[in-house]
Figure 1 (spheres, rainbow, N blue to C red):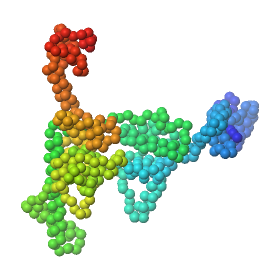
Figure 2 (figure 1 turned 180 degrees about the horizontal axis):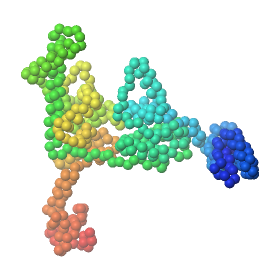
Figure 3 (figure 1 turned 90 degrees about the vertical axis):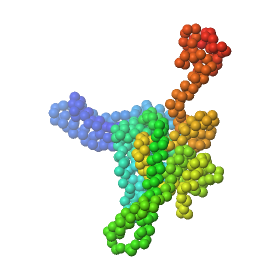
Figure 4 (figure 1 turned 60 degrees about the horizontal axis):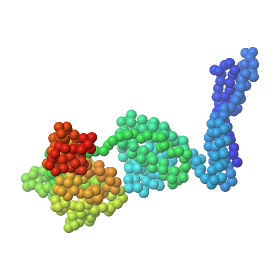
Length: 522
């Protein structure tokens, strides 16, 4: 059974006086009739015809409902009675053919509510759950929606009487009203306005694109898993911001030697600080405890000064911690998250390998260790309470790398560029030694599942490409008579083909200048 409810506005018009025309919502019929009576009285008082005041209802907002036993209720909107009747016939035809798609379900939930459910039900199963939760929850906070995750976090903070971490770098989002819209009503223009607003705030296009990667996951999960069917996805017709963020930064000139010297200086400073701290603890253990914080602070300051003098006088052992980490990343082309999670149990010195049970792509892999890396790892301390090979946090690593690059005078060389450099050097060294590594070997070294990503990492620098071109032309020069890359042919210079077959056809035996029509045409 189908029913059509007219939810269009009522309009009261006065003939010859458009300034008195007024519109009323469909649920304000009494107010519309009251205004009509008032206008008729005014017309009669002015000596005009009161029948010139008309009350009509538009037909541009129709609500259609289809209720049949055994089928879910279907409701949709139409802008005319003809459109409503056509949609009714289509819905009944779908039911006759057995297609039971309920598009009305998507109008019962907002996109913010789907974000909330995704945080609770899906994010905990992902490897990068903390990042996903942070992004989605920040969307909800900016739009004024308190998720269940935020409520639990606030309750935990109230119970422990601690405040949350201050997000000083967070830039509040604007133009995100579409989060409170019904899921079926979100359109591509909503996303486009948000992109424009974020770009005006100075957010990089790559960051915005990663946000929409996550939003797309939520939308697809709602459609495929929760069965919130849409007639058309809001991503159809939406253009993401374009960008190019592939990096090809390589170490040039003596940058490698300067970085290694800066790394060793960082090791010296780190070892010196550790030796001073140990000496301070020994001095404090032999001293008499003093009452009061100020006196203890003064005593510690004097003890540290004395400890520095003693350590500088007798010397200290330098542990190559940062050098081992730097060389390990460069030789194994590991990700920093993999290196920082490496434990001693998974380092096999005899086999010269290291094992990662869990990596970024969810697969385990084994990386080879060169001999000098094995020797550096053997020099690192291995305490009973120290399970990890490199027991530091990512923040400590970022801070140390910033100091190292500044000390070495190397600019725009990120930590992840070490991975690029290691793979590129492996590809270059293998070719130069006459033992080029195939794609499978490089893929096993890097752990990449996508060969397109591997092509980014194992690129050759432009300088080496130029050397290879010179070498190719030099070999061709020794085989045939060339002049700056061109073949002399009967007084006419024709460009030599890069293929071997064509070059042999030009002067195959005695370097003669005779040629065929094929070479001249080239």
